[in-house]
Image (cartoon, rainbow, N blue to C red):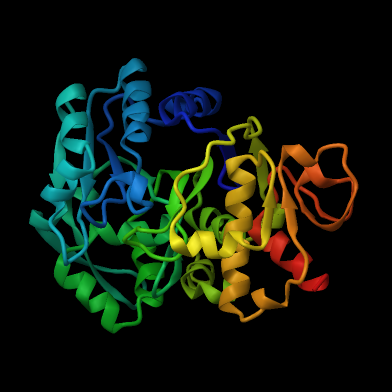
Length: 362
């Protein structure tokens, strides 16, 4: 897999999905047999993954099973939760204690680790020792919103590799610049994005949106630029992505990226909607919509709401397999509504594309 490649798989069976995509990519060919492999999930708070805040444990279990089946034995899970919570508590609540015992994989609490200072090219950054000792780091962020940086994915998830004192300093620096420079020091070998159920707007969960996808890449800047499009953000709204590109961490050029989708989503199961999502769904007429497509629409509507344009929509937005072979005068979302006079192509379309289309038609 090259740095300009992304691979996507859709569905709602995390362990099966991750094994399929890792087998397809043959990641074991890139890893020395005696390498210390570190899995870095997002366990910012002690909340289950169904809240939209943390990395799905079944996804991590699937990665471990794949690696162990290929003969890799030196695997650890490392994380440092946010300052307001304890990593040990998050390991327990999020199901990682169980994973550790089941697979014999140690848990490393980076809140208790020692650290060293590194020069990231003019910016000094303290990074935990164990994060720097790992030979092959698999970054496993959650695709979700963030109250201060708009979104969080691969680049920001590395913030869990710094001590609590450094996390406080990052906030005084405005987050964006130090996050970008951190990634010049703490490097990803592989990124596995948990896009199954991330929060709409908040890193601590509470407003989960079912997105039904796992994304894999090697360039954290490219991964985050793609994630921003999925959630309907312009790159200018997530400054750390542009800063990271400018200082040479990676490329944000998604148009030149080679993106492979291994399948299409077919799961129409919907989670219980929060009040926020219910409010957005008032604009939608849904008939058997796949979760990935519906999730993109919800993110698009949230962005439109933030921009004060949601109330300009005067017609129903139609989405779902139930609209196949039908004609309509409303706004259709996805390939299932291609018979509509106004329809956003894609299966599923990105929130960014939905936003641009709706703004032209309201």
